[in-house]
Length: 542
Image (cartoon, rainbow, N blue to C red; front, side):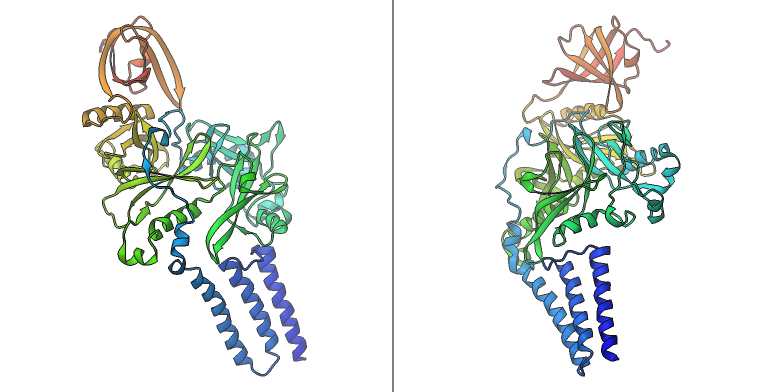
């Protein structure tokens, strides 16, 4: 009788572990990672222990099983440790010697292409569109936003997902599409429910609300049950069709030092599955390397290049990356940008910057001392024009402004989570801060501050303020990044185009033939930004 009960217990245990591991949590059938090993080893030992309870030495069996389980986990973890493999961890990310900084190393400042809408603001803008879905809007939620370049423009893209299992049961065919929010124009917010005139349904979803064969991890697990998987990303191809992209990796040092070996691509609508090596991945996929992997590898390079004991005792040549990072798009590729400081530095200054291609993992390291991202944010928020408003600073993006490496970021109202103003902070001299209600206004203020602060450009003449008086020969209006601008050609200014923003109150009222007196920021470019604008035809009493 006892044997039958024990046998039934073994079957029940095996069924429970298989259900939890395979069907519910999709734990890889692999001993190549600590988590999956701990689970399947526990299953094996508990089933073996149940069988052994039929015998007489129950306490001995339980003790041996517990010790064996602990040893089989601790030994590989120890053999994977940084103490035994410091230089191997440091060599994961191949970073070349520091090179001299060049202007082409960072994107050129372009107000129409600067990504300033972040995930928090995208969430506010996207939520407003759910009302367009009618009754179904109450049973869905917007998923996590992914940054992506789509047909040359930067967007935050998020799927519309089931709110729960019962919502799924009412709409098993899937949820109606996804949200696209432009990172450069807060007015460009789209609810995509059709492609080429056909209804779009996000049938494959990552949570358990997509039951049976519609669950994302279950689809991958059915094709590759032994594969180790990183977190998913929601991306669009060039036709705006949605896919799930999941990096596949292996641990190169027993249970440590993860390395990406390829990606899984799953059609979010049909569930069609593809598995690609790094060099075979479709070109529309921006990122193959998970940011968290690169951050870990960069930290190991900075800490362990001189060996494990140097990290704790000698502490020679140690570098560390600052908390946070920026994604920089350059020549169609996506890079992780991170500043480096000395390991024990407390002066919030950098010794250089690293760019890592998030498809190929190729790295660039260039020497440039200056403020780190945190110091730049503090400088902007400490400006007397900003301090009373108690805004939050978004994470800075590095750009080139008139040959000067500069941090650009939005200043966000913490209550509405909407970007209200913009800041430009000089990396080499973070006391030079430009603030404006628009990107163009921030640039004008920044150029003026650079001139007054004596900051010389690297590759272009120093900015200067010049006064121009004459008759307006041509006048035009345009919108860029959701802001209105007014362009002028004034007699006596040669072929220069003068650009004023909405903060110049008389600019919208000006027409060809009017006499004007303006102060403009003189640069080597054809377009000059207007610092002050006076229409002489308009008197204060008009």
